[in-house]
Length: 400
Image (cartoon, rainbow, N blue to C red; front, top):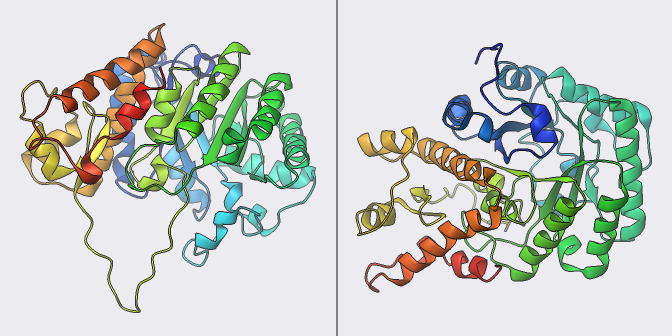
């Protein structure tokens, strides 16, 4: 990408003021060499109707790798280098027991320590490391916010956020918190978070929530109580003039745009699409993992399904096609996981661009209702089943 005198996409200022729906592409391990093609395609197709961003996790990556990714993306206004401090070796995040640190050792010195209180020098190192690799917006130096002594934990997190702001100064910054789903489910915890959102001077919030284990790795969130907790958070942010961004939330992040969220991030891998509890899979020594099931995202049904099922239903009457250049490549050749991941990300970005309309609730629920009606109208023999069934649609319809 090259720097142009007239930006082709919505400016960073418009993103930060919530004037456009924002889509943040998470740089995944899968198909990462072609991620810039997705970003360029979103900019070319949607211009100033869509705020385009990208994020790359700093954990396990060298400064060279991070700079080589973010540096050339000068047309992408929102660029994030995420220190993912919730997975710091000294973090209290319960999910740490699922991480094999030896496979992806940290490359930055700030991972060597995790201060208990506010340590200005350490926070400054975290912030400066982000800028050094090409970030245009800093993430506050926050990690996991525990539910144990929740009020004190949130106070301590906000003290770090305030110190981060002091270091960042007038430049843009997201309050970057990682929280358990209980902060959405439990009324007392949710009220603590909402009060902080309302009373803080900070305008931009980057909140990642740890979901329950997903039955279907590439499925959608269907827990009604969690979804309604998200809705309360998003609507409060909208009313209070705050911008809420939901990293690694997949189509749930898109749906929450209907209620007031400004943007979200997702990526090609299941963990980029859902920050959720992971099941430990035990295998005997030398036992190989089973071959991956070829999957593809169907934008018409707002669901990722087996590619063979997609091939069958896409020719049924009234099924609507939403092609991308990556799906065209699959159709012209054969299914490849890298192409399927790129197709998913581009498709979801195209979907988010529609949120530019004023009545976002109608914009979101129109395709949900259309897809639900179409599936219900199919003969039983034609309906997608198992993991290919978009069972989330009925849950989401009830949120209206």
